[in-house]
Each structure stands twice: as C-alpha cells, then as structure tokens.
Image 1 (cartoon, rainbow, N blue to C red):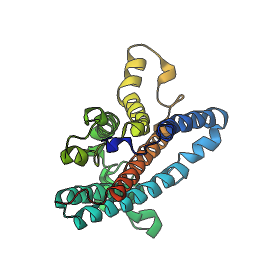
Image 2 (image 1 turned 45 degrees about the horizontal axis):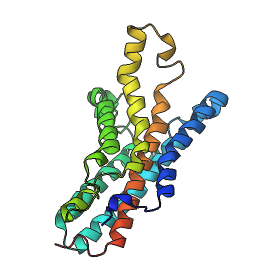
Image 3 (image 1 turned 30 degrees about the horizontal axis):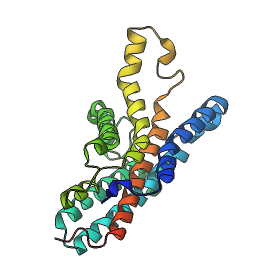
Length: 245
C-alpha cells in the first residue's frame, strides 16, 4: 500500500507546494531591494507579516483541535492528547504574537514584564532570560520539521507507522522550514564568524539583513505548520477507520 506520506497524491501538486516558499522568498528579496520602504513597513510590529502569522497560527490551532476531537471520537486517546498539546502550542504562539491582547485591549504591562521584557510588553518569548535560547529553539524546530520525514518509513508496515505520519511533516513541506533555519543560524553564528574572523562587514546585521527579517521566515514557518495540520485533517477524513483502538 502506498504510504500516507504521499498525500496529496498528485506529484505535480506536491512539487508546487514544495516550490512555493522559494517563490515567496524571491519575491520578498525583490521587494526588499527594489521597494525598501515598503518592505520595512511590512516587517514592523503589527504589520503585514506579523498579522498574517497570527491568523495562520490561529487557523492551525482550529485544525489541530479538530484532528484531536476526531482521534478522541475514534478511541485514540494518546493521539488525541498529543494533538491537544500541539493545539496548545499553536494557540500559545498566537497569543504571544498578539502580546496576549495587550495592544488590542490596552492592557498595562505588569511590573515583571516591564523590568525583564526587552520590549517592555506582555510576552514570554521576549523576556531577557529567553533570548539566548529562543533562536536555538527555532533552529532545532526547523531542522526537525524539515528533516524528520527522512526517518519515517515510506511503506506501510502497520498502524504504528501511520501514527508517525500524523506528527512528521511530509517532504514537500520541508521547504517551509528552511528560511527560519537560515535566518537564525545567520543571526547567531554565521554573521558573527563572517564579521569577527573574516572581516566581511557587509554581512553585519543592519546592513542588508536586519533583525526584523525574522518576520518573513516565521511566516513561512507558520504556513508550513498550517499545511501540515490541513493535510493531516485530510488524512483523517480519508481514513475514517484509522485511529480506532
């Protein structure tokens, strides 16, 4: 039997999905070079990229909840519970992106966050103690999400293999995680080595690349996760008997 990892089945569709991030990156680089002011406005706080990322994570949350409910209804408490955790991750990221509604509801920043959050807002990921590890987390998440499919069996050997495919992004989604690996590796390692040891000042952050270039990369990451749960919902619908027991 052909593995569920091949959904969508049409190879041209899978290749098109894989190619989308490269097209978006090319367009983004063109806008950055040719329309610098427009690009700068798009990557600012509460601007296009961040707002789209919020919408995508909230949508991914809804799909993850739906998948979880589907598993519970079929008697798969473990799979359902794991998707509850995944949905909580998505809604947590969504709430972090909107600063837990701080700007929407005009909430004052609590004293702890005013002292320890480097942006002075109600978010955990910008707390100073998190900054040294946050970029590393992005790199690890990107690597796992983009490469884990390599270790998943291509052919069905039993139900356990099919369980894995609900938690491992398909190969054609791997490209959505490349940008976040690149940008945070560049921030944390590449530009330091290039500037400090090789003297390549053109690679210093603030020349061509800036800190907020992370926004398009994080948008692609979010889009990859959304496609992941959408495809898994499709799997679940196509295989209504799977997950029982």
